[in-house]
Length: 101
Image (cartoon, rainbow, N blue to C red; front, side):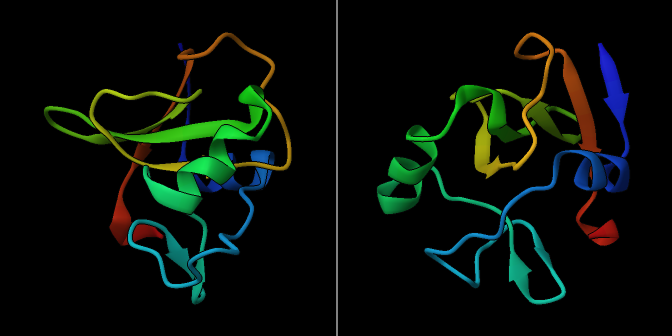
């Protein structure tokens, strides 16, 4: 499994801002919301994106992770990135620490 830090992931895959809800809950950087909710119009938007551009914020036992691909279990939100990932779903993980965003 490939592991990245948040800054490297952000610079490499380039998450897009959420144009539906500019305030958001999970990932705001410089007053820009990059996370998409798991329901409603935001979920519909995510569902219509290329699968290799979707990432999921997943809550684990000890940590919160960003995992490549769309996941349902323990999901908190989604990210849609400009750059697609080129590995199998579930093979890239980023430990997510809100204090660093």
